Length: 159
Image (cartoon, rainbow, N blue to C red; front, side, top):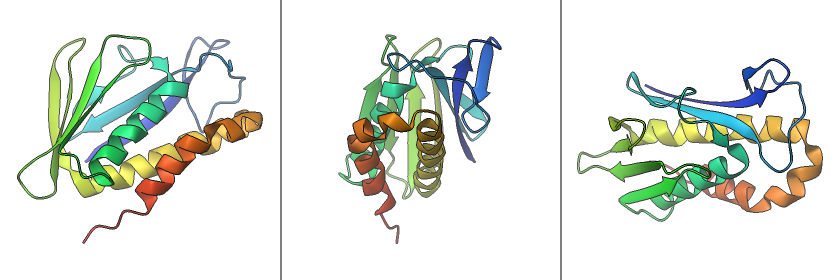
């Protein structure tokens, strides 16, 4: 089981709101938010510790997924945009499995299904960008690289 969510910080309400429920305005310079990631009941990314700039976080995450699913790399890593935290993805010798690890605030890892990760990343990124452009349509032209990365992932077919 893999669950991925995106949340923008609502300064008026003082809390994170799911991107599909968010109705506020976004700061064009720093989009304070969180991506949550739960793999087989382990919360790898969670609100309390991993809030950051989603304007950079989603592209970094998409790049990692392109490394794994398009470029067939066995291991990829990303740093957080504003924090010294490392998130790693690694394919495992067991067919169709991956391991995800994070180093802070404490070391955590989980093993999950690659096909499910692929599906969930595409769905979650789609929800994020659809709602991001709903709120800030004027920024769509600046996100062509990210949309291209998402398109690459959507073209991957599993046997």
